[in-house]
Length: 334
Image (tube, rainbow, N blue to C red; front, top):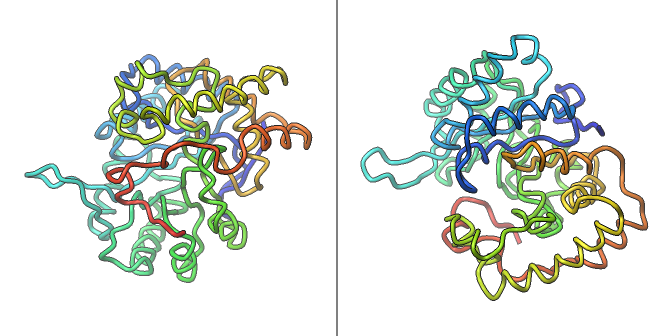
């Protein structure tokens, strides 16, 4: 498998990581057995970067990863790069979501994550969402203090603007920024890709197969109806869903002609956009993970990349990336 680097202190990692939000029922029911089978497939495929968060399933995702690590023995932990996040909180009485980047909160959540993951350090700790009431320079200072205690090795931010990244990096190098990036979402190309490359920050791309649109088995209307997030997402609402499926049918045909799974082609395209980019598709299926991994075995040729750009040019998708409610939290910058 191709390799990537996150920051300056991590060893070479697999170019493909695993996003473990799917272990939390976000895209439909997920069983413990499926999670363990998928994690086992990671080992078999050479995938060494696992991404989770304290809020995925209320800690369930972290707990499952921790149980898997415990069953496999201490030697495995040294060969896996584990990222988790904190910053999204719920009001204890109303349940309303808000963002908390205070040092006390971040340290308390880190300790809970360490316990669930059954480890004494986190390789990469993200601010999941920025608290707009705190300057990012101050939050970066909190992360530096946590870094000095040895419970985390590197830190990053999720869904921040290039300008915010520059402000944070002026305080301390930022190992990674996590953002949605794929053939379906080209927004990071308007400054984030370039800023990450300039600062030596890895761009960790979630939803790299367009929440299933860029696979051989995209969600159909009846499946979308069963998944709350997609049901409220503009790209999966009619008439946008039908339009997007029709357009991506051409991509699926191109993948079949090339003898590859469509998901592998989407991953290969993303990896070709620059060496700081590391995709973390989410799946609870070992079979799907194997298809995704095919995209990270060898670089795509120039002719195939040109053909991909022709069938899915910039701006092809119908509907916004997020609904108005879903846009709450990520920083817009263009």
